[in-house]
Length: 218
Picture (tube, helix red, strand yellow):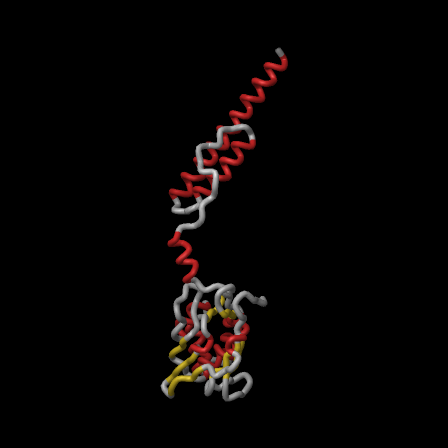
């Protein structure tokens, strides 16, 4: 009698856990679908395995997790990351950004944000970095005794990564013409903008380096 009662209690407990796991799986899936997240099969799989582990029937979900949808994969492929593109943060290339202002640069090619949008003007670059154009213009026009310090401080504090898929396409331009990357080591992340005077070093060319895909230093 005691053995029978014990078996009944164990069986009832297993069923309760199985039902609980199934309900958790259903509730999780419903919430994710309402928010548009495409992870329903993965959570079904987890709920199924939990249910089976405690003696349940499996929860009625598919027993294998599914991969992301095709559209999600396409969006990821279009994004620029430290794994698939040359990349750098602003504080590593203060000399280049400062040279844009010093040389009245109006156009930029070959540099992008993480969404693959080209940072084609100093304004777009500053907006992306979170640097005020007022700060940029005050430095460019030398209208304040603290303009240099304020500008450099803002650039150094910028966090977003700047990307490029092909450094040979990097160039800048102003009313006098276009200045292109002439570095012979671009595959290693090197950029040398011919004719763009580097105010910090006094060099007639502005040089800087980006990290190669898959490598990063913070």
